[in-house]
Image (tube, rainbow, N blue to C red; front, side, top):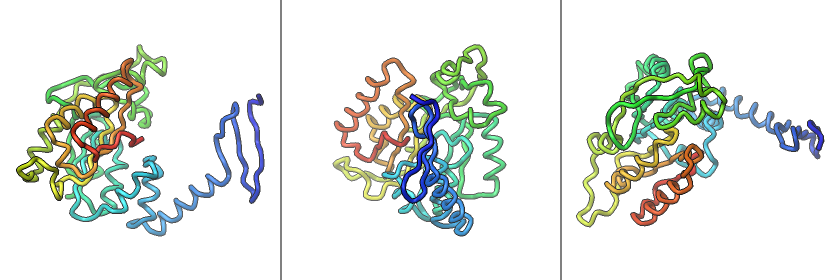
Length: 268
């Protein structure tokens, strides 16, 4: 197998492969440039939405959630990082409650949204129980902000995978019980038979919390908090655990048992 190959297809498309894997096409670059130009031309509309979804990596099957989102809708962004999901939701006219435990990032987010009344910034991680935990991150995250995406309160997985186990940046962070937060801040008034809200107060809940989502989802399902949300999207990170597939299977079983079909476990 050649290390690097370049081939040409009809209509001028070029494919570049490294060790047999496609890494770039000329057409992909053209599409990205087109998306960028549309965002510049339409900064408050679909053009910017499409650009933010491309940056965030929103799966195609979930893009309708943002096209259908609008003023008056409420989103909860768990694992806000630099705020791309929040920016996407705000672009639709929705309001956002965001959670981010990283002290460096929260400083940036507070400055970024200090004049925006549609954003509630929470300096905390979310989990099944409130308290305080250690946030693990690769030490490079202090100078390379992209590395902060691997920060976790349950595992130093990403630091270890990068052969940097001896160079982990740790900080103690506050943890909010998300189920209690939602029940305290958003009411619904379920029907007597316990059926879901006709109009759930939370339009979209995004959970991307690097492995802490399993226990959290179990609590939200067992306590029926999922009924307060119209849509819930989750990145499960089962790869971070030796028994990750077992954890994922349990959540899928609970979703089926409780009819929680508004929970999608394929966010990313």
